[in-house]
Length: 136
Image 1: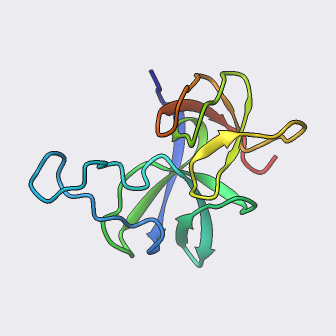
Image 2: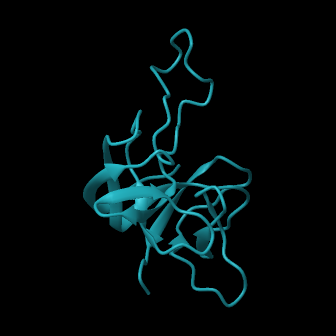
């Protein structure tokens, strides 16, 4: 089970790549996947503006909340252990990098990644715990 520990965070403004109308879980009209972009990697898109990170971006952290519309607050975990939504299988102890959609992915051989998996996932959209090592 994924967990968070000693997570330090900052608050920025969300752009339209982070904001997803998810509604209330199980309410009529709400999407089946109510996760939005929560627990995906984030980058800076402008002054005080956070957006979803893609492969090759400078990652600043992991989105902790679910902004519903652009310009809402985006809480970004920047240090510690964070939950991360993955795009496929990841084994504990391996480096984690950013997939094109902002989810975590096992880093290539010789790549430091943006964190280290503390727990494992066997399929896409599972949550794992990642020790963030941003800016290394």
